[in-house]
Image (cartoon, rainbow, N blue to C red; front, side, top):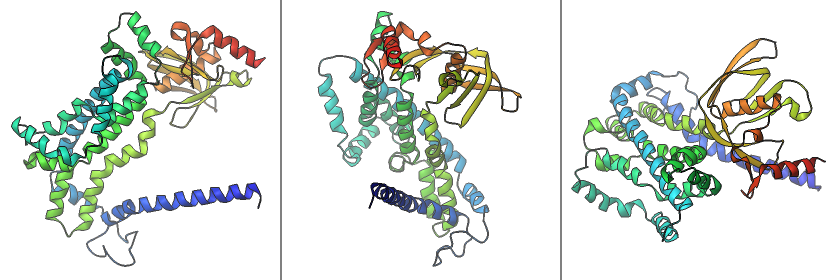
Length: 398
């Protein structure tokens, strides 16, 4: 048996296992959706009927009208948003202290933080309830929100590891310019940590949105219930009407499902290529920043607004990146394949990619905008002077 045949069989086996595993995980969700569209009969027939003969969309209307769905949704959104803000701010700030500041006992305290991750929630449940009861916080949202403002061991560990990848030269340069540690964390490290912050926010959202035990312990007023508690009461009232209950469950799950399917857009970095980079002397740009392929023919930036500073790299200087200040929002006038004039607006990463590629068409490289004339090696993170990188690059081309 040849090596190609073995490799083909290996790929077929891996793909088969992945498909089988995906089907196993998708089946409960498919059953949930199927049951939510069925009538009161035939819910548990054998063999199961995956596609109902008649779609009963009124199950969703009944689910919303049966209990104060919108009231519970607002309560859940409030708790979730406030918890996300607290978790991202506090955990990133503590992580900055562990990653970039030197102070006595730093490493010892970090180990203690990691040890707390080994404590199960059941161990601290009763002491926390006694504490919050003495503070008078029971039957309020404070026990569900305030703990996030004191950081989380896992979140702090996550952010610390990301901060360690950011060159310390940035914080040192900020200190030389007179910036405080608070300003450096807020204006330099947080903007560069958006992928890690997005991950932290997704974790917090999923945890608080689906939290059942916390609201069950601390909330007793039905007007303050979350969706998870409301769903429990719904089941007690309509325990035998599984179709309506499945419709309510799917509505509660919907934000989490949407976040799951679109989470890749939170950290999309984008990539682009200008025609002159491949030896084609045309004013043409192609790029993909996460929303599909974008083509710009003879593009011109007609409006620029705001500013952002972040890392950029380029095929012209492989293996290195630098920090470049760009406009936060741009409006670009271009032609499409039919020769029609189109206007495209971009913000954030898309705006950065547009400016980077249009600069190529104008004979300008990202190194012409690099701050402090320093570049960083992508693998070692070592700082190197811009002129040295240009010499190395020219030597490799020769």
